[in-house]
Length: 266
Image 1 (tube, rainbow, N blue to C red):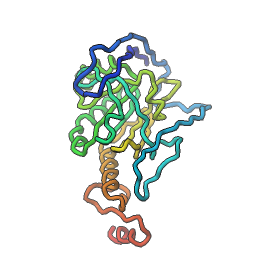
Image 2: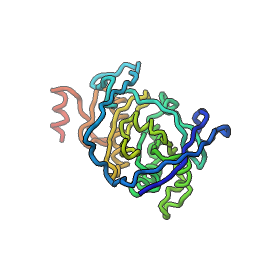
Image 3: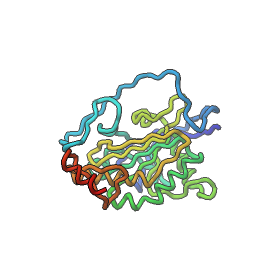
Image 4: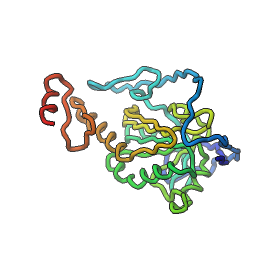
């Protein structure tokens, strides 16, 4: 299975989902996926140890919020910032993650490749539910290692023909693979990203992550549920959410005695 796409380097512009810089420089290159690309990631015999540093948020967190160290895992650390070209509303724009900090929660998800099989089911499912995320102050950003030209061709292709049609959120091009590396989802020997998903709060801290192998699609319902639980505990820092919690259900007090109220009620 092979594909070719063009990459771009552009002058940086301010984030505006419906505008792009006409001064952008477009440089055509070639990207070829290895013929051995499988439906799942093959285990590697040797791995290079990585150490990634992330800046700490200056905001003081309340009880029971774990702060990770300056190394992996990413959860509990400030999300690595990035600025990259994307496609939105059939135009080329520039997306900068830090533009959302202090304003919105962010669902950042990675997928392996354009014009594949599981990927469009996830991408369109998030687009179809976009208004629900928008109502709870959340932006969605999709990322793959394809070029913006490949993204554009895919959204211009009808869903019934294997395309995406118009999406309600940007698709980001990580053709340099730098973003996938930052978030620990890149498969180096294949040049594509695993199905990683990260929920980033308004302070820019990663509060949740999942990484699926290539053949396993993700659940929009579970992403929404986890996001709602995160927002609930941030609004109610003296409470925690038990397994499967959904809005309107009983939460729990993180206390040896007070937690018995929850267990007595179930």
